[in-house]
Image (cartoon, rainbow, N blue to C red; front, side, top):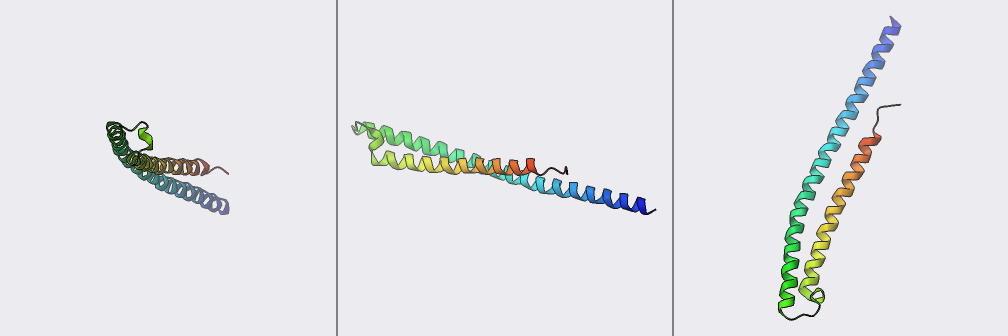
Length: 109
């Protein structure tokens, strides 16, 4: 009788451990979904920034600039585009860290 109770407790502990891992990994997958949503939003902002950069380069060329990348408006647009790209890259790095946590959360002992 004591052996049955021990097996039941061990089985219950195993089930609870797997349930906890499942819940934590589900939360992590939700975080990944949120990070990808932010990355997509930042990609949209990146497209707008690149469009503004192209317009600034064209305007600098129309004004007779020899090197349009040295124009003040172009430098500002380029800096904004780089900042948006850096934030987008941070989202992808955060996703990689979360995925590594999911990989390492094995129930095996």
